[in-house]
Length: 284
Image 1 (cartoon, rainbow, N blue to C red):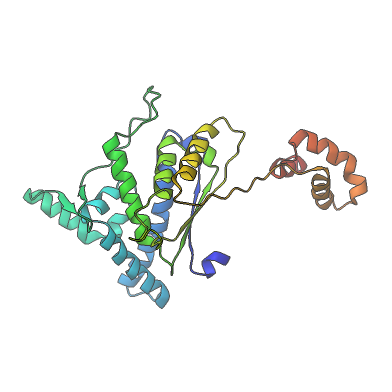
Image 2: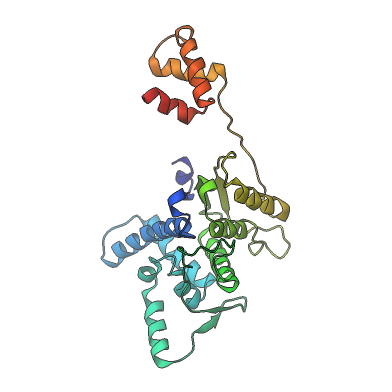
């Protein structure tokens, strides 16, 4: 709440093992939740319901920024992953339907002259037995990365910086890690002198370094470090020592530390000092 009070927007992704066969689902649903809140505020404005002036200005500026950064075809393509775009940009979708009915092409250029083709971003078949690292065709993957890069440029600025929190990154699917690497190592947000950063995004990730899936995370982190574009800071949270474990158990049982020391020795051996496991152990 402290960051939000200073104008930050916080997007929180929590990965889990159940979503590994649905590439990008965690990231896309997080962005969709964010934009659904924007859509709710926009609907209130449309219905004449009073909202804070700051919120009204923010919504209007945000939508204008997205339309300035993304071509109409890009907004339509992203709606496959962010369905709330349909309610945020109804005019664009009505125009696309009319254009399709008229047979009048489905391509346009963004402000940098890059062509973005309207079309479906299709999920690969998650039931396949193919163990290939690349689930999306390269052209679709590149389009997704490009559109999300432009989107993060549009929704973050010095007045409204953004934090993207990635919890349990060790459960992230390969496509999500590739997208995150692309976003963090993106140089498109740098000014012409390579010193002016037009994007204000902070990525914070947590992962367990002893998980088997950690090889993917390490590859992602190494790619970010080797890019020399973003600064990576590590905070290693090791297990608690004897004193820390005993203090936690003493506090939980409301007993002096000298009385809980024998129990804390046993608990520490069972949990390796992991505070989360200590808490679960004490609740049993």
